[in-house]
Image (cartoon, rainbow, N blue to C red; front, side, top):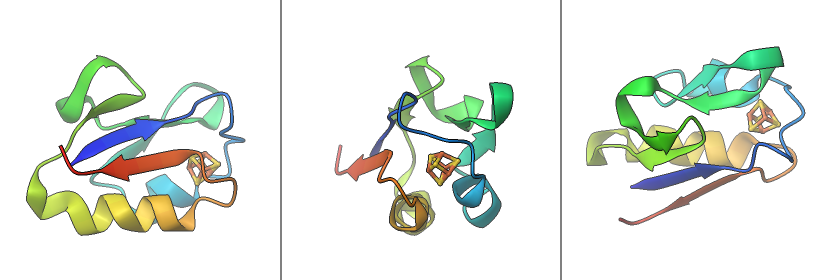
Length: 73
Ligand code: SF4
């Protein structure tokens, strides 16, 4: 699954990295970042394995400002 975090929209609430900690981590100033294992050139973009798709989707669904996009690779 492709995951993109729109960092400019993230307001550091922490919900995604608390509820989906295998995909998202806390970055600078509390902003969400992708786990370093899955990044592709940016802390905010990458690919997660299929077994983590439900967790990535949970993070997307929980974000109050829809700052996370998840789509099939
Ligand atoms: S849930 Fe959304 S606003 Fe909250 S830390 Fe994650 S990306 Fe940022």
